Image (cartoon, rainbow, N blue to C red; front, side, top):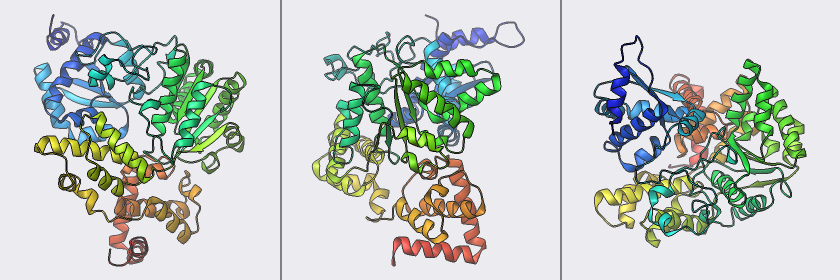
Length: 508
């Protein structure tokens, strides 16, 4: 068989002015080879985090173009993995190429659909089946034996299942069986199970809200898996609200509203993540209102998620707020101590290294509000243990997760910051989360973002999530601006210092 790089070189040396781009099959094979070159240069967890969900969408004699899920991933790869990519491209293609990125979740899906299997050679070549072992509550021995297969995202044929126009992949790990149920999420879990057992009936719409990293995505995908396990022909459209907005804008520009409406209204289940992003988008709210009505009246299931309940989404039309409350609105809350312990034990077992009870207790006491942080701590601890060749212990955990233990227990939360800022400036939380840019709102918002960056462990994206779903670049701008004002303006410095003292207390 001709190596992918050789086949690519032949296509780029044809006697035409511009080389023909590689075919989907050639791109898929080339991307697999390029992934192997990248794997050799990074840690496994780095590859899984930053490269597994990317895809190669273009390659010629001058450049290669990778599609990534979001702007944060693009910026991170540009800042920290540029050399790795340049070296891997040069090794694979026999010479340097300009590496470019395009942010397009749907392009990743289309490339996956149009190409041949780009998974690891050890994985089966045939697509996973919804009614096979991939979604069974009792995995087969083959599934238990293959961690690579278990982590492969699921795509389903467009005649039924997760539609190709969805901008997500279903993760086989995100099933009800793998969801750790505790007091904080028991009702949300039971409601999601109820929706999967009787779609379009008792709980329609199903509106799930909660802060970042508490398991909303896990529950939504578990619901989809359960629906497909019961009926593989169920047509599910699962996408982010941002994608819905972008599709609507494109339909307006291209005069394709009929096609847009057919796409969104000819489904059995519509799942929209981050529905709070509809705020301040009047035309899109109008279109979603009619889409909602059409699906609801047809007995189709609507599933929505948000970081806040319907009534707290700024500028959301009252008729949408009312409809979102027709079915069941439920909150998923931060995990209690016992639930955090169970999550830590489950996550470590999934990675083949169950952590000792005393280490789990230590981590459960330190990470109180975010399941993703718990999982990140487990991944880092297991990786550190493997690299150091030492067993997992309390001392190893303190060394590997030093920044976690340097943080004072009981540090101010995001809620503390928001309560203090809204009280001082006399603004509402909904205004801070709105798109208002008047100085009376923008200035308190920037101060709150600056404080959050200084005294919490939230990422830029998580901080932006507390302020109406703003992206990380907006947070960076706010932090830089307030930081400059603190240096140049004594009144601002005194204000910020006063906030810090009230939040952290004396002596901190």
